[in-house]
Each structure stands twice: as structure tokens, then as C-alpha cells.
Image (cartoon, rainbow, N blue to C red; front, side, top):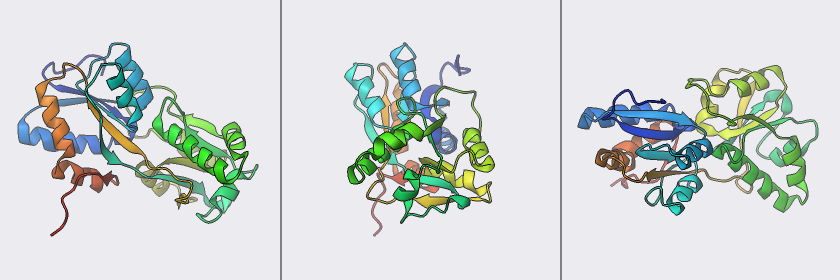
Length: 255
């Protein structure tokens, strides 16, 4: 989306992990308001850099609160808010014999090959490294080992929009060059469904982290963009996010 096709449309930069749910949010919002929304997806760290370099969307939806917070610190946006959460999980080749109970032991096994996204560029990679740091607290010295052997398979650059952003991960798990990939549960669920020899393993709570997604309005954004932000935070928007596997942060309590 180098040039907006509709100058009146709200422009949204959004994390790649939102590529499936965002069209549903946009469709529902546009049906209610008649306002068009155009989106650009990519690793949140790279999208933040694009904004710092002069890109001016109306809204930025990041897979980490840290990137919107950085824009606020620079005076490029309003204050960020957490609008949804995700879950970190592991897509594992069955041959690796990894379970939640032996997760740390198997991850540290020199023969087990680990894949991740790219830290600093993509929050999924940052969350994977945060898991490594938590493991290091209970197994001193583990971080160096995990940092050295983790392969950064995705998230290093913006790519042409595709419904299959995990192709390098899928290929690695299928051919055995990767035994386990740490990523978002929302993305791994569909990935694993296409790989009969791969399953999802829950990461032990003691070493797992919770991805918190941040939303921010960029300076001088269109007023209609704030309406879309409110829709994302509304019960209707949060329910849509939940239907796509995310953990909502704002749903009314059941009576």
C-alpha cells in the first residue's frame, strides 16, 4: 500500500498477526459507518520504523505495546492502549517428543532445532527471547545456548501481502530442518492443521509470556480513525477478536 487507493480512507498499519481478523473488523466497521479503511501489514518493529521515517497512517496496531509507546515518546502519536492479547505457543514436530512437562529440557537439547521470528523487528521474536530469558532464570546459562541456536525464520523484512506468512516455518517443520517454532497461537493453529506430523504444545506458564497488543492514533489522524479505534475496543470489536483466537481485554460481564 505505497499509495492509498482511496484518499478519504482511514490508513492503518497493523501487525502481520492481525492479517486475518482485521478484514473482519474493517468490514463490520465500514458496514456501520460507510467509512473505508485501508491496511498495511508487516512486522510491528519495521512498521514503527516506517512511521519514524515519515510514514503517516492514521492508526498503528502493534503486536507489542512497546512500539506504540516509543512513538508516543517521540511525540508522533497519542498515548497507546492495550487492545487485545495473544498466546505464545510451540509448533512441534511429533518426532521431537516435546510436551509441556519436558518443554525446557527438550528446548535445551542440542539436537532440537529451534525456529523463531526476528527479535527487534517482529514482536513475536521479542516474546521468544523473553521466554529464553525466563528459562535462564531457572537454568542459569540457558539464554546463551538458546540465543545461539535459535534460527530467525521470519519477520526480518516487510513482504508482499500474503495469506501464508509462515511458509518458511511450514517448510522447515515439514522437512525436519526445524523441530520447534515459537510463535503466536493464533497463527500456529492454522499452520499445524496443514502439517500432520506437527502439533501445538503449550509452553509452561512458569516460562511463558503474554503478548499484549498496542493501538495508537498517529498525530493529525483523521477523526474517523478514532471511531475505528473505539470500534476495535467495543464489545463488537472485542468479540470479533475473540472469535479469531485472541484474548479480549474489554468484554462486558455476563449477567
